[in-house]
Structure formats: C-alpha cells, structure tokens
Amino acid sequence: MKFSLTDSDAGSLRTPCLVTSLKIARRVASAQGTRRQLNLAAEDFKDQTDQNLVVNLGGDVSRVLIMGGADNSLSQARFRKLANQAAQALLKLPVKQAVVALDQTRAEGGKTPWKLQTIMQAVSREAYRYSAYKSKPAPQPALRTLRLLVKDRGKAGQAVRLGNALHNGLALARDLGNEPPNVCDPAYLLKEARKMGRHAKVRVSNLDERKMEALGMGAFLAVSKGSDKPGQMIIIRYDGGKKSEAPVALVGKGITFDTGGISLKPPGAMDEMKFDMCGAAAVLGATRAVIDANLPLNLITVVAAAENMPSGGATRPADIVTTASGKTVEILNTDAEGRLVLCDAITHVQSFKPKTVIDVATLTGACIVALGSHASAVYANDDTLAQQLLAAGEASGDRAWRMPLWEEYQSALRSNFADVANIGGREAGSVTAACFLQRFVDDGVHWAHMDVAGSAFQGGARKGSTGRPVPLLFSYLCGQAGL
Ligand code: BES
Ligand code: MN
Ligand code: ZN
Image (cartoon, rainbow, N blue to C red):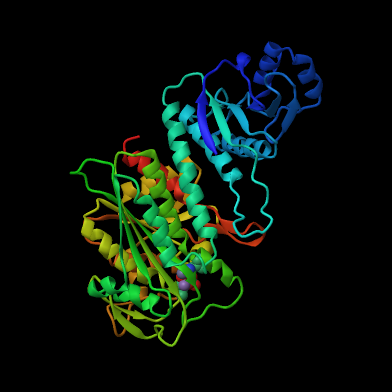
C-alpha cells in the first residue's frame, strides 16, 4: 500500500473510486454529468454515520463510496469510526487505486494531519493479510495506492510521509508476531534486525550467549538455557539526531515461545505463546518506521530474544541467579521469564546513557484481567513521560492507561534467600512485574514499562498479531523528534 497526496479539484478528478461525503459526491457527479445516476441510486440512502453506499457512475470518477454523516461535524472518536468503516468498505471493492476526500469533515480539534493519519492507519490495518503458510493464500486486496485529497498541502505532505513509514513498521511487527515459533526464533529476529542495518544511519549488533556470560547476564541466561536455540540480545542504533543528543531507548521482550519452562503452562491456548515476542516485534516495527521516516533523533533498540523451554538443563524453581546489575534473583516460577530477560536488557541499554527507556512486553496474564484488550498498561517513574505516552496513544487511536508503581507493592517481591524474588503473590500481578523491572532502572533515568499482553495480539477466530503498540510508540517518537 502506498499513500500519496492530491490537491486536484474534485470536479476534475479521475479515479476508479472516490470515498467522500454525500454533498461532495453530488458536486462531483454534477461536474461530470452523472448527477442523475447518483440521485437515483442515493434516493433511499440514510446520510448517517454507520451508513455507506457505493454508486457506480461510470464517468471519470467511476464509483463513489459515500460515507454517511461525513458532511457533519464529528467527534474524533466518530471520525475514527467513519475512517474504519470507509477502509472496510473500500477494501472490498475491486479497485487498485482510490481517492479519499474526507478532509472537509470536521473532527473536533483533529486537524488535517490527524485526519489523514487516522484514515491511513485504518486502511493500513484493514489491508493487512497474513497467509505465508496457506497453500491457497487468501486473495490480496486489490487496492495498491490511496490518494488523499486535501485543499491545503500545509503539513499534509509530512503526514503522508509518516503514514507510509508507520504502514511499513506496523506490517513488520504484525508479520513477526504471526510467524510460527519454529521459524521465528532468536536467530530469525536477529536476521530481521540485520536487514535494518543496510541503512547508512543504522548499526546492528548482537550479544550471543558467550558475550552475555561475560557481562554476567545470569537472569537472561537462566531463561534461554532450557532451549536448544541460543538466546540473542539484539542492539540496533539509529543515529538520526545530533551527535551530542542522548538517545531514546526501546527494549522489547522477545520470548519466541513461552512454554513456562519447568513451571509448565497448561495446554489450553499455549499456541498463543508464540506471540510472546510481540514486545520485540513492536520495538522493531517502531524502529523500522523511524528509519523509513528518517526522523531527526537518536534511537537505540534492544531486543531480548530467547525461548522458554523445559529440559534437563532448564532452570528450576528455587534457583538463584546473579543479574548483570549484580543483584541476585530467586526464580520461584520459571514462567515469570519475561522480567528475567528484560532486567538484563535494561541494565545493558543503560550503558548507552539514554535519556529515556521504554520497555514493551507481553509480560503478564494479570494485565489482561485488569485492562482487557482495549488499553495497553503504562507504568512510569516520571509523570511527564507517562503523560506523553498516554497522549501519543490517544492521538494515534492506540490507547494506553496508566497503572500505579507505588513503593507499597515492592514488598511482594521479598525473597528469603536472594535480593528479590521473580514473582509477587496472587494480587496485582501486572504491577508487581513492573516493580521487579523498576529495581533495575538507575537513578535519574526516565523509564516506562508497557505491558501489552492484552493489546498486542488477539485470540479466537481473529487470532493474530495487532502490531500494537507501534502506532503509540511512533507517535511518541515523532513528538520527541519535534514533529
Ligand atoms: N507471557 C506470559 C504472560 C502472558 C499470558 C501474555 C497470556 C499474554 C497472554 C508471561 O511470561 C507469564 O507467563 N506470566 C505469568 C507470571 C506469573 C507466573 C507470575 C502469568 O501471567 O501467569
Ligand atoms: Mn511466562
Ligand atoms: Zn512470557
């Protein structure tokens, strides 16, 4: 899918499909001498949101997809719904190219770039297919290019550039998430990351298990040692900003399959634990988007990639390991493995002196109990950072909700034998997991943790990766780059 701009007058448009409001459809049909066809076909059309109508006109504009209610002033939420419905209806049509003219629809404070971004994201999401392993793949949608009609180019050009970059980043994140775990293993994630290293401003490196040993990453290695597949710590540096500027750091949980280890999970829905690398997929997708958009900022992305398996060499409940920070951890449950790989990744990324660290992880089932799938959880040791992430979520329609990181929760992680246990009690499981990670954050570092266990993938009939929170992260990073 390619997005581009057009500012041609509605009257002189040529396109196989124009997506617009009733009023504009009438104006276009009048200018092109097809007003009678339109009036007849739209006679019974209710011009309300939730309604839409396709009319074949046969002129230079051969079809119009009329979106009900699009001549009214809408709330941002309503506009987003309208964009989603337009995307759904449009992608069912056999057209390779289309023009969307919805810029005149007012969306309560949502200016042109916001409206364009909302439309592009809706189309991007709706056009996604994953059928790499079907011998008869579902047909790809016909639509290849979408032109967005605006009156005034202003900042619209930039919005379209960012929309194309986000489209690529989202598709990468979703593909990585959907890939089966016998293919998408730590080595595969490294290979995918290396592809980004072809860009002049990007360097990709990795720590293999020998190097992690040398750095004392006992927590990470306790997870990967049960698997025949060696773990990898993947590091991507993107230098798009000033040399003197401290980078923003992203850290992703990349458990390519989570069996639970010796604390083995029950079989129901265990297949969904292939999605336990969706945090890694999201930070890789956001990084891809930043590179494609050529954002003026420095970024460092770390992926902690490992497989959590039971075996004769696997970690036992009660094992004690020493982390790269020097703190010791009593592993009471080998299924709480995400925090183990992440604590060493957080320690490592801080050696690059980032101004901000954001980790993303499908960390706890408790997060799904708390928030379901609509919101990602945000934890932060800094109010400004928390607000920026929540605002980026609102703006991009990829919403998040802040959770508490109060000191009082820390005592749940007390261990009789080591500095900290890797699990708390039954209560507040998502919070105590965040509290565990916080212990590895240095003083003065602005840090946020996103638990995306509920938002990063869907189960059931629509099983698959959503690519979340790539839109939130990319929106945040655009803000950091001053856009
Ligand atoms: N990857 C899981 C969390 C998860 C569960 C993500 C379901 C998405 C859907 C994580 O590694 C895990 O197993 N967490 C445990 C922690 C517990 C042992 C303290 C959990 O949530 O049960
Ligand atoms: Mn687990
Ligand atoms: Zn896990």
